[in-house]
Length: 458
Image (cartoon, rainbow, N blue to C red; front, side, top):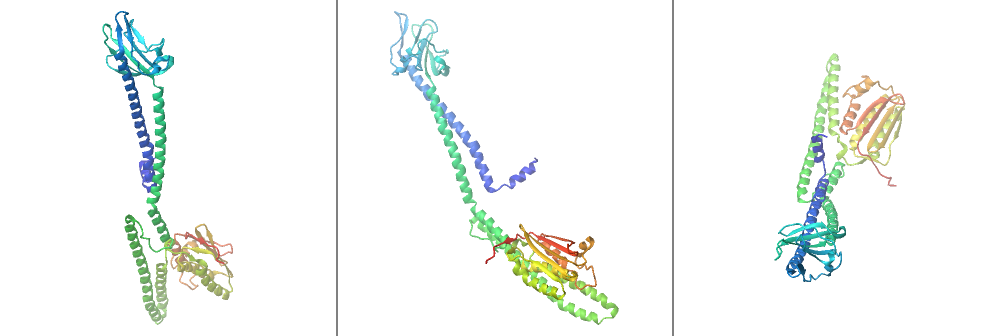
């Protein structure tokens, strides 16, 4: 995998995972390395202490050795203070030899002999002893009168006790390091959870702001985050002021143009007949453009920052009013509106979408209109179908164009479906026009507005 991909993955790692990985590296690399060094140092220290003990016994043996000139043999009359030197194959031995005819050993060595290594300096090494035992041996050569050859003196002892001691230390050491590593990881996990708790609270607070449940971030945070939260609150407040200012400006512009347009319509009616149609068409275009941009400016837009509203409370008055209008036109309006559905939408936006679609259906329906409103996971689906003449695929595309009217004989500005399409786009939704089962047009809208269902309070 290319390096930029790995770099991107590393950059997206959370702070908690980074701290855990860093500590895990210390536990995996640092603690075993420390354990190896401690184990090695202890082994060397224990071995050195064992060798020092053997060297002390070797010095006692050297001090006690003598040569009997009469009997021409080596003699040793010292007591080493350890009865194991007198027990056969006890594991503790001493030996002195000139390499020829003069040799003297401890009783424990019996008929066996220790390997020798010539040298004037003290030598400590591990050798094989009687009965395939492992011995730790110290040896050196001395010059003993009247012998012409150097006398090689050795003291050895089984190193099983030494190895058992080292092995026991290693078991305690590695057990302690495993416990220490577990403790470090546990403490760090608790530290991360406690240390990053303000960030989790800030994240939850941001989600509340995004869902419209709060207007600002809580600044009761540590100093490192309180300044950030204050700055973000200032940005949120400034954005809200800009949105409100834009809405007010759009409203003021619409009201400012309303009177001049009315006056111009009156003046157009006084113009010659051949000019009235042209004037009326241009004034209609101006009025349509004003209405379109006013509706778009007043839309709440993306539903992430809008508090949840009850769709039943927001749409019921509108649907009831349109149902009475449909009844006067001998059109049956069937609607399904769940009582327990809430969505993160501006109530005015929901009324604008449903009102424009139903108004368009009422213009073309012959006798029946069906409105359904359903929740699919976190998406809201709205469908309005009628039994009118319907549209061809080309007409469906043209109907979404601003101000496009497929039948110039019908009243209206042609902005209904276009305004709905703009609002759906602002909410990042999807809008589909197709042939309805009733034979007319079916308008299906899907909005990702995080639908919330709550049980009926009754």
